[in-house]
Length: 606
Image (cartoon, rainbow, N blue to C red):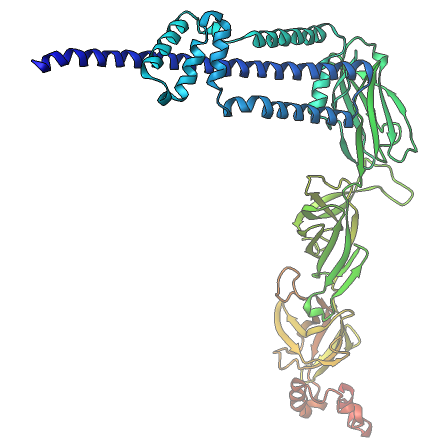
């Protein structure tokens, strides 16, 4: 019975507690909602102030730049610094704290009650009691909560927040923006020029003007000595063609404010052109230039003149073929080549710019009928031979080599001249390379002759021996072999390599052979042709094989006559002595013939 009486009371208390909690949650929610609105209003107001300040600052700079004092590079840097410092400072001091700090509930409650004066501090009391609930009786706190909830229900959420500051900042922004737009639309001088100049203080951007000079090409430039430069620009605004002028001065101030009137460019509206260096044989020194059109002036641009890409032969190393036994030699300070055929020529070149790739181009000198003949002979031109040799390069030096040879006909050098070309690391090429001559010295053929017999037609008895003396010489190098050849009725009956007696290290040699008609199978009445050949020690230029120069004597005629009975007994001995090469001096010459035997014939043979 008691439990039944107690349950209704407990249920009633529970319902009251739930209702009280619901009221408190409502009040807390409204307070939190209002606090977010306050933060949003403050944030938007701050952003409006920031935007209005930036637009106003830029508009002020545009007015000063256009109508008072054109902003120099230093002034533009100052303006940009002030703008950045102001934006960053205001953001750090006024906007960032709105995200970091928590808005006080007392401030929020006071703001709400100011919007509704008949609250009678119910909301402020609730916030105050909520801070120390243990000191307030639950019944009192509950009553204050209900009163605050009742008062909050009568206040719209937007009305609880003071938005007057937001409205003022919005009006200010609209007014400044309107002023900036009107100035941009109706001013003859564009404010956007100033904005661009401030945000790019070191850039080549002209000041605001009624006539604007835009898109100057090529602006700053680098040229090689003697080149010309075409300058173009777009002119916007009311102007006459004669108003557009290019003014230039040399860096050393020897030439000051020279004026060139620019001309309209074909097929391009309001675009003008002028060419620097045409009347002076090309630009020969660095200079500065600007373009003016009424009150419009372009920034000043600089043209830097640099030396033409060039490469010169620093030294030439000539390595003769090994068989010549001549030493390698180096020629410094010039590129002319004078080398024995087959020599390797190593060219060391030096450029005035870093080298990307370099080549040796072998040239052939030919007559050019299209050119008039000058005082020094027929005009010539050079055409590339079949060889273009890539050089090894490092930095500004290059090394390459070629072989001094003759062409396939053997009548002239494979190349009469050569030049060195290169492309720099920036892609520039030497336009007029020096041309150097190549003189190929041929390996001369040896000279060979008969010292005996003296006459070209010789009669020899069938049983006799003809002593043949051969002399050969090589003016430049060495004799490698001497041979004697005998032909009879189209058949070679003798091809004998002769022993050489050397003088001057084989440059001059002598050989002797005792020719016996009987040993060669020749009989009385037979006729034969004999001649001598000499070969030097030349090697083929493009290989290591022996490729000698060979010379020969003229043909000598040998007629075999009937045997001489007076020398019959000595024929056998004479023949054997001739094959060995001994007795070449001739026994009869020493005096045997003088005693009487020689007068009968033996001595005459000697």
